[in-house]
Image: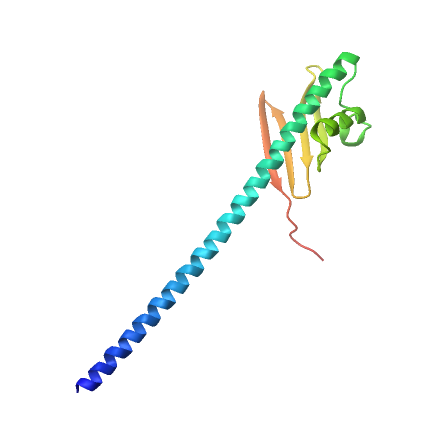
Length: 150
């Protein structure tokens, strides 16, 4: 009778070891999935912040160019130019900012106070939008994702 009990104890120990190994593998897999998710979220957030910083620098450079143009009696806003930005101002931004990758566009300019009220900077992955509404600066970053492809 003791032989049967010892076999069942050995079997129970093997089953317990198998369960421990299975639980450990499951926990490791769950931690890996969570780690990959957290890393991808952090990476996306970091890239969006860098793109917003670049857009803020471009806007500040456009404001500097506008001050120079003001002295000459012009404005950086030109409805006939690409992106509504005078070509000389675009060249100034490219010179100061080192040819930024994205496309910039003015969609709001207050000619009385000579202030940019709407600005958009678009890269391949993000759109950064600035608006001056109710005496308040508002920055928004949108991620561009391909949802469907036919």
